[in-house]
Length: 283
Image 1 (cartoon, rainbow, N blue to C red):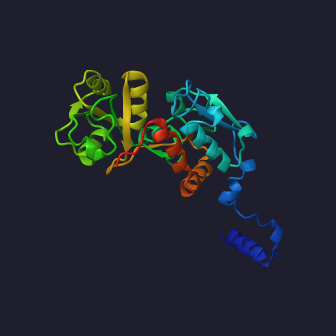
Image 2 (image 1 turned 30 degrees about the vertical axis):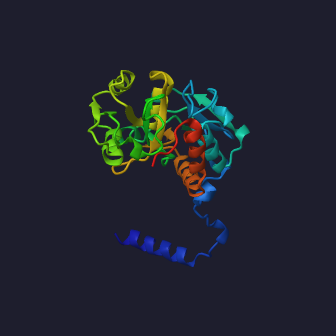
Image 3 (image 1 turned 90 degrees about the vertical axis):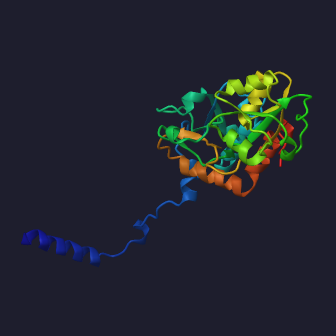
């Protein structure tokens, strides 16, 4: 046992006496240097590859063309790309089915943007960025109806409202709108839609992404009266999707944080999901 101890003591002494070579010390990379464009681990070197579904619907995209920078999620994607150091010519798009984006396995994109809500179950299979959009609630009514032109939540107090059971929309109706009469509660979203079609209710409350779909594809001559924020509970957020364990995640998170702090995300939301998209704020 003595010999190893003697050798260890000698080694320590030699290290202690060795001259210090400043040039041999390498500092750990900072977040800024690690996120420099040339340091990023990308699917295609020098190109940022972004995935989304096809067709790409409005108001998230415009003219089924994610690459034009128009529509909420196209604008967000290019804003994140800009924060990462990429210009428009250095971004390429891949078509990726919605449910494939957050399924386990290797991905053919650096990040995907497609109204994917961050959930614990999905986070087991993929990585999410910090939320880039907090989902709001929306009121939908038939065009020309009594409540279709409401400009405030107070104007909806006397409306008979339809909503799905067990949803954040139901909580929002009870806690934010607080209608005079209890809402009509349905088991399925399609039952909510049919109630509006059959004039069993004056209006329905769904999340804003669903409201765009209801008015575009499910109920003819319906309109979004407006959108409003829920209170209480854990907010539903959309996140950019990345392969599980992606080295890009800290940099994408940093980009999203920067866009939030500068107010850019709020501006993009107002431009593409606000009054111009037919969803004014109800207060």
